[in-house]
Figure 1 (cartoon, rainbow, N blue to C red):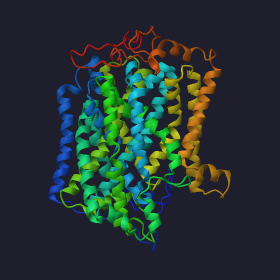
Figure 2: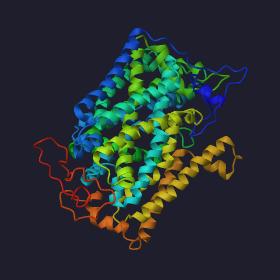
Figure 3: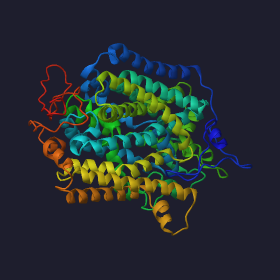
Figure 4: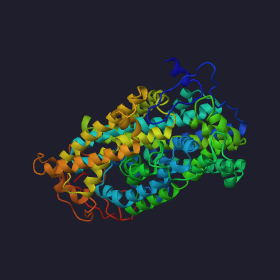
Length: 617
């Protein structure tokens, strides 16, 4: 308890080896730990940060004044959760980008790059492929189905049981990864650079984001994301330019290695390729295993896909994915290279010979020692913008999952649209509190926050990827196979996480089975094996259960398969489907085809199809 209190009252001084779990090592007599000492902000820095916070608060007030919390019926609920399905591709593309590139990227990518080089940027470049998969494979199916949440797709494809399971699992994933990692990163920056107590910094960021999200809904989130993307990109560009100026450009950066590295080690910092046994970013593992978590993150996660569901047409959805894919090229240059610059300039501070390595301090050190007044305030505002853009996307997604899939779909089916919106606003507040309670745990789990997030996703995403991929691509996939895939996948996934934590707290004997499975097997390879096991289980059980699953999976297949698979024809009227136990009559009754969907401007003449018995048929 004393160590935990010290961690949360002073700047973080680092931990031992990474992964999803690493032991926190308190200071010991005779050893000098290296910490970033706070700086005093100039008046112009304070002014820029204050203007940013005032602007974000004003967005929530404006949307509340426009009636974001008034009214009722279909318009109120659809506006709050899906922005009226009226968003255009530039705003959605920027929102997709900044919803992904949060403060954990500014802090985590810079930290990982300072430790291993540019190889960590492969995660960013591969996202362009996953965004194309979203725009051309999944988005047309989602929009043709007229869903409001991704678990709703599972409910229509496999039955209500899988819908509830995925909603609960997604909420747990949000708490363990997106919410906690984003606020941890932003709080670390503010604590290290300006000396704000972590609890105050974290509570302020979470509170403000939850407020404007709860008041304004998805429309307010997307509008603020556009402004935040500008602030974040301008801040990242200025910091990168100043950093390269300090080291003499790219040639100066690569010329001499920092004292703790040899010339050969330093040259490897600038290569994407890493050998298959690399402990951090093996290229083979990234080529094979990283796509499992990537497909879940970009194509199957409510926080990201909700933006695509809010677009006016399928063409706007595809264009927004293209824009976000091009923007994902930039993090290597604007976030990874600054970490390498920090290693060159502050090697002794980040990797002291007689202390603990602190890669997470690379970004705060750059802010403190390279930026003049004005630019420091701009980049602090950019870090806050990155954090809030990630938080607001998860708040809206979590509220949608809880209200539409669990509260109205399971706990209180008769709830009115007005009540559902109010519950969503209250759930945002509850989620903010739970996020703050989880933050101290992260401080003792990993020394590289980026690796922590990627490892958790690699262990918990495979079952979701399995049920969606086979649901979209294979007509024989049924509810029994999906349930078996979930059971096997999460037993193995949580077992891997627990085993890794246990082995790092109690190191196993070298060469033992525990050492091979939980220590030496990289999380990217483990994620690939988990995904293959889930796919095999889903396919085998679905094949064996044909005609013997009680009819649940087959009933959904026969009536909705034309719209719930990539081979469906959205322009045809589907046969009436059985009444869903979780009806959403207040969502649009007409469904999108490849040209239009509900929410387009007047005169667009949507040419959708009706979903009998589910969307108000």
